[in-house]
Length: 239
Image (tube, rainbow, N blue to C red):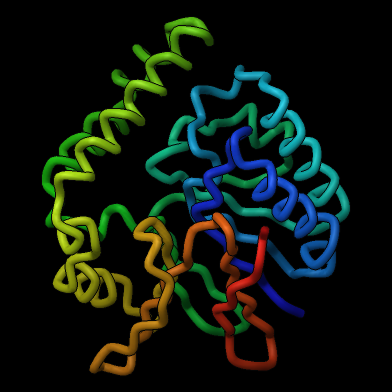
């Protein structure tokens, strides 16, 4: 009995090895897991559930095989794929979960977040996040055709890379005060998130733990949380 956590795969046609590694996980270890949690930025970009690109259809079909076989898959929006919606969930069998959410796993309460809301020092990004999560902004974007949305997504990614290149590293990491506030607000002693691409297990002074999943590139990162033992944050080779 084990529950799996992953984040920040950034699935994209330009990185087929990452897709293969994820499909291998679904066809192998995930089949015997109690559940699989995907904590955001699953795709490099998601322009809407009506995008029938080959990668999207391949991943949806593989997820459907897993969920139809009895393994629940929970997915959380990230800052790259916040347009994942009902159609994706219906086709894949995944269950969309809010950010943040507290789950009870084997008797322990755990706070799950994508992680971008913890980066409060990056005020420029936080302002953009508030804008793009609004129903009006998303409706306006989805009103465009698929090809136009693809072009807009490419431009947004380019703008994001340029903006991030001019920011200090610590600005794009979590704010400790916000982390402590979240622990206090939700009354837990374990938080799991991704987003920052800085995998680690942080031990706080009050005995709470913050576990950060890494992104998938040449290597992947996974948390294996067994029902009868301590969880492990593990790295594995993709290429």
